Length: 367
Image 1: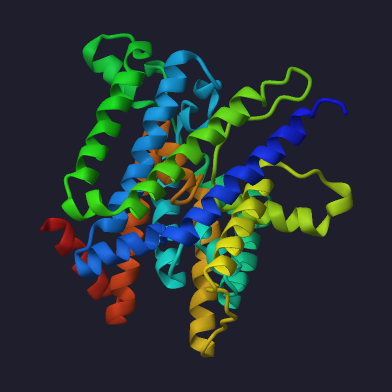
Image 2: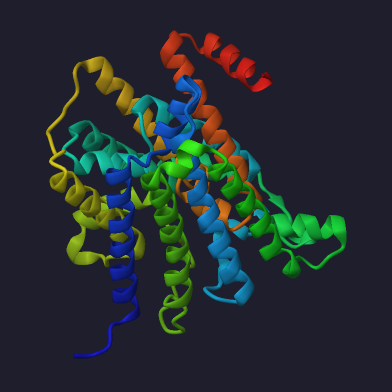
């Protein structure tokens, strides 16, 4: 039996990482929007701490690899010198509002769909189509002409990494700052997570955060190591759940004329992992829309998530964990915008008034 080819290794690794992501989310109720909702509406922090732990584990792991020269971390698109702050803010906010209308993120859509939720299947189709159109289809013209042209070239300071900025302030070479910065920020997040007694006692949430963080770091390792094939190079990337949903739809429709990729394998693995846990826990059940109004809300929300996620270059996982772990500046801005959009959307759904939602959002930020 011959050795596995690079594309095969990447597909198998992507499927395995997807299995971990799907099984973890389904088994431990790991959901970014759920964490935000509980924090804003009930003041509960258990799930947001699990999510913060995932960022910390991914960040520290990625920066250790970066410091050791492993996996070509410096080549990730997050660290490109073109600083797309407008796209991060506009796209992140749109994604967050859409997430509140749907009730979960792109990652959560797959997890719910695997449990028999037909609403999530509808979201998957609309989100995937909207994201693909914004990246490569009709609506990409709007993104290209209005958003992509509004970038700031940070080449003069070395790039958009936080260590690049710190280097300009301190005079210390940026290469010496990546690992310390990652350890400092990641360590701070870990300290925040374990400062809560309830979280320290929740083995499920601790395990979920650690597994998600390691899976994200694993994505960078696999694509950065095995993807360094001189004859068939692969871009260094990790887990994200917006454009890959559209790519999965295209692959399903053009199976005989397209190759399975790492990102598509992650999507398929995530669905499989969540489905396996749903069956094991006897949670699989068919669900659908209750009324037309709910279907309309999901239609608009999933379309906004697709367009916003591609404009922001990622979702709560793609920017919020994968991107943030690289210490690039735009993912932090995109993540803050996603959170702001999600909170605004929550308030809007509660009050039925965009004006009241805005006043509540500004008031909560002022406090």
